Length: 531
Image 1 (cartoon, rainbow, N blue to C red):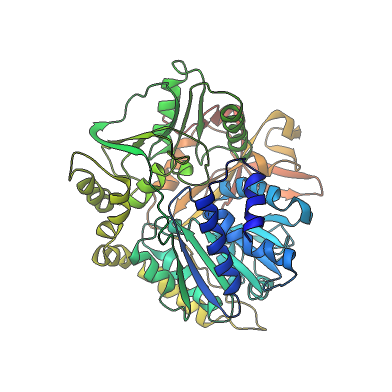
Image 2: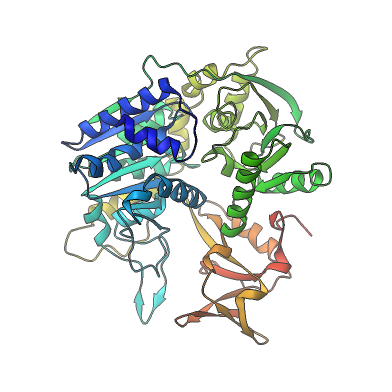
């Protein structure tokens, strides 16, 4: 196992920390040796220790020793953006095993839903809907409702399942932890090996995810010490400006703020980049690669600005962080982006005028912890998570989602083998999303006044996902405002290599729209500010 993990690390870097390697090998071997019966492993380690190698190694190790415990692996990520980054990383680790890595984003048109490859990367929503015999998206076609399938759950029952960045299985009403806890414990109690990997799992969240599992084992650092040389400061001021020095990462709470800061700073800073959720897959990947290449090949100053998208999945040696205050688990993840090579780093936390998009009570409790002393230690923040997410606070949050959870339980009660799944709609989280395709001239085959014929190839890379809350109308009203005076096209029909779209008004039943790039999109992503 140690030899395998050494090979994995060397495929991406020449830096081997022997103490860290010993810990990684020990924990990976524990997982491999504990696969005789269904079990949930809680891999709870600080950011930067190398959790990815730990949870990947047991599955790859099977091929080395010819002792198999699972025919396939599902790696479940909290966001679509992380799938592409993780796919490229795993491909390096498994080059000698051939093409064994695939992705599934839960799209209806994908005929191989959740069985694309021996290692399938997918999202929380796609995985959950696969268990529930549904797909994330669905619509009526040829008189039938698409998006109802029963195959994935059979595959899950014979797989090794990993939930990466498991702390992000939460939402504004704590619906996802309860739903996923029910699904995961059903699988574990049926004999499946599941791993939760995270640096920040509040006890209240953990209880909701694991309470019905019969066999749970925690894997932690034990005596291994991983101290971050990070100086943390909290300022009562609002973040307005930053210095263009060193390798700096800036994380703010809203896309509006990220866009504003980027546009202010791009004349001042030579090498400045932005990544957020309202950028196309293609553009996010381009920025990620440019940052990676610049850090690898030069020592020039660099500034990366973004939102919560930057909290996970980045493994770059940043030495300074500017961030807006956020709930403590989110804040710990942000600080975890710096000092990853034990280098000295600095984190400056700024206050905010509004807690949105986070719950005000969580931000307020985090602020109180930050204001307790003149110095702030990373380890103290980690140990304070449960002061913010205490059981009373979580229960208040949950009450707002109890109706959704009851509907889920009723659906699960009526889901039976060898029968069609219930037709009821269910939610994994209190939101849906609209896929927005940003169309450039190269994608257009032909057009007339009200219709475009689009080239299907490469279109998914020109898309982004806009979240629509089901608990209020704010996000839909905001999208309608953004799209004022913009030509919006909706899906009409498709042929083998082309898609036909027609100009139409936005409504609540549309789940994908098409917009010309020049009308609504610039180098900082979707233009969402008032114009």
